[in-house]
Image (cartoon, rainbow, N blue to C red; front, top):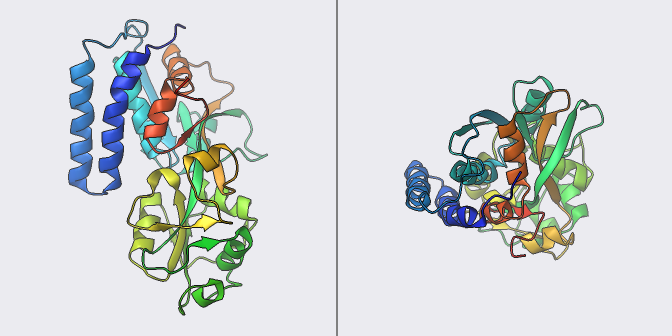
Length: 302
């Protein structure tokens, strides 16, 4: 397959950046505005986009799973539409566990998982398209700015129950996390070493819900994908290291996980699916991934 034209990708990058900023605002009007911005930019660049290589492709690609990958899959879908306009890609945000199950049971062409595969999840392959830092978030009013991995483990298992024990003001810590089966929860608990030991005050079913709950409670702590975190919450450093693209890529930020495409090993992929996976892992797509808030595996500046 020929290399997808960079000019087309970068034209969409501007739209993806606008969409990412507006989506972070969290309102329905913002989502509408973001969609309009992407459509407008795509239309204005259609005549100059060299999409001939893939324009003959057609079909549908069903994706679903990780809610943390929402911004990434949306950006990649918009970008792919520029070079393969006759391919329709759907996305059902049901959580990483459901994404993997969908790939196993062949109800999804591509499952989305914000974690690696477990030993018992066989018959499928994980293709990493990006990395993501799991940001530790607290209320903007919190006096705490840094925690160690050990302190996180103690907080989420309720060995530490008051903010005053970690340099904050007196107040009982409210622990907020994701539901069982969430890739974000699985990633956080495995990295911190608290699998099946966390004691949550609230278990929520979406990344945005965790951020909103922490934003509304001065005593709360939670975790969320770096790509989803805005200024409504405060992001802590972990062991003195901030959660950023640079620290995730160089490995100095400890709480990080992969963003994976999950495909069934026994299914012959259509040309459209193969092209989309190649697109998502290409050098040019890295710019779209970066603008969506995740960390690309290749250097889009090269």
